[in-house]
Image 1 (cartoon, rainbow, N blue to C red):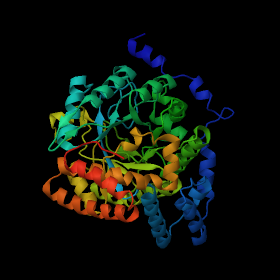
Image 2: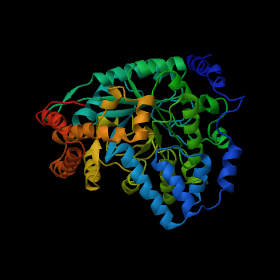
Image 3: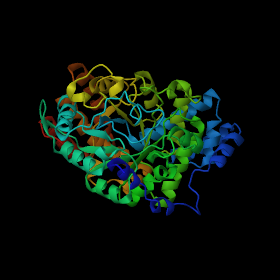
Length: 494
């Protein structure tokens, strides 16, 4: 037995699956989901408005409600749904968009996912794992030249990038502090996208300074899952992956992120399953997903999945999927990535998206090496939007949004059940606006081009007027913090 196969043989803990099952069954009932989708009739306007009322009260919808909303085809009702979705977003998250950067740590993997350029048997992939010095250089570029304050660190499932490497790399990232135009840059929150782990490893991850733990089911449809993840690989165990977030919450990780790879199976089933997952977490663990992500199947090196899939999701259906999740799980953060085009990301913002990446490079070591051309053999898939963070901030400002680099809530303990209560009440968005403005001012001072700074300051002034109008008593204290930021102090928060 090789060291790699020995590592694989110890990964899955069956008892950490079985204890969450309900009389031997999991929470994704394939037949029931399809029955609800197929049996739902097109709802009346009155039915739709009744459901939207629950969404606007930040209540998780029932699967039957979601099935009815899926059937809405009337353009006027769809516009009404979109209007409510935007109201929900602004009620829960206010007028801000959170940005981050993905940082790929390595592309070694023991799995053979049919749709992935990093799969084990893809001999054309150029394999590499970043050293701690290389991670430091990547982080210095992200924080000193671009201005990111949070990243999503992405790890393949392989002993070379196991829990010890993850913890060491997180420490390296958090230790980086880089001089900027007026202050300094550093990463203040590390979210992690990694393979499913045991409760014991997840506890270590939490203690290592984890932000959100992100694992996507890829597809909730069992037969499709089995076809795409060959038998005998770690990832072939559907339930080990399905109950990852139960284990994470048991380990004390407050913020968990779920998602699917849209295009592997029928998008309607996947949207419905995401709701079932949220309901299962709320019911069993007391906390729903902190985020839901919307990656869509894209071409990858030596994979024909993107071109051969009968379930490719059209732009209109993709936008409807985003809209439906905003209405069905109204408290959750929603992430769209640079897989999508600039125009699709603009459209998605007004459907309820709250987070996106920028200045994205997914080749291993691509930030510090300043590789401009996408190299298929070095990355997992092909990007659709390669704009810089400065360009994205300017675009958002043109749409009337401020870009938030705030991580204060997580460091003040507003996580888990606490943040869920704040999100459902709409109080979190108003509170976070203050810190979002502080971080936006900081970024504009340290990194913005003149054009972006001018446009950003216009939007910021409108936010200041709103804060003063809505909170006249607290405004003087907040404004003192803002003046301190303008004078060069960094990482201030209320």
